[in-house]
Length: 346
Image (cartoon, rainbow, N blue to C red; front, top):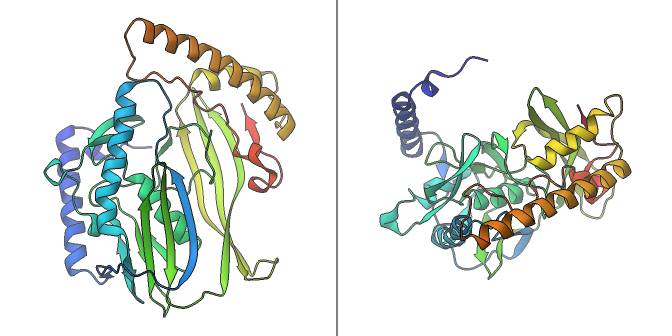
């Protein structure tokens, strides 16, 4: 695959970024969309769907990562002041960046973790992708239509603690990598977002009851190896039900994901186990036994390293104290996530 011209030199990347940011600003102010800009402190009477996600996810003992997590929570508070209670009237489109505005230090945003070219780094306003992930998940469980969304190009975090399928998130980068959600119905919708001490909470509300419910499922989940890289593949499907019915009225594929995962010693060790099983697809029970063994080995190794660095007063910036990709298969949390069998193919 040919590399884009903008990736050949930092100046070309900067020029391309400025061009896309200018194009997005023009689209906001002169494009065909009508954007949702009105907020109301009064909740609409009917809830369509509600979800919450954990605010702090520490994958290591690095104090810099802990600081990024706290700064992310601070950035959430600033963003939610612009997002909570926004009304999405019929025909309007919700744009997260249009409401949040540019995250700058002058506006009070702090340095949080952002993902760039396969690694974590600090950036002003970092961590706001968690809000985009939540809003996207709410939209998938509603009649709203996602009209603009970018997925992450790699999978950097372990599945441990993950409660929704991989590949249902949404990336953010000011201002052209955005999440747009359109209201095609005849009813007013409202997005509500708030924080507790440990959780980011969100819900979609409506002026009238909605007769349908939605279920998001993951299918064809597997990890494959391409040269030295591991790739994660899955499909995200949405099933639509009438309330009170058990048979879906509609079932359609939303996304097909194929991304590179960041390899850790856990995956390397696991791949060695799989090398002896080149002619087999690993079933649930086999995966569970192997992954628990890998978890134990990785945990002991990381705990010893974390203890050593803490004793010496040193912390590696990229050190991971918890297993990176211990829980390789989301299907281990239940067969509903992967109806047939999930395979890891060498």
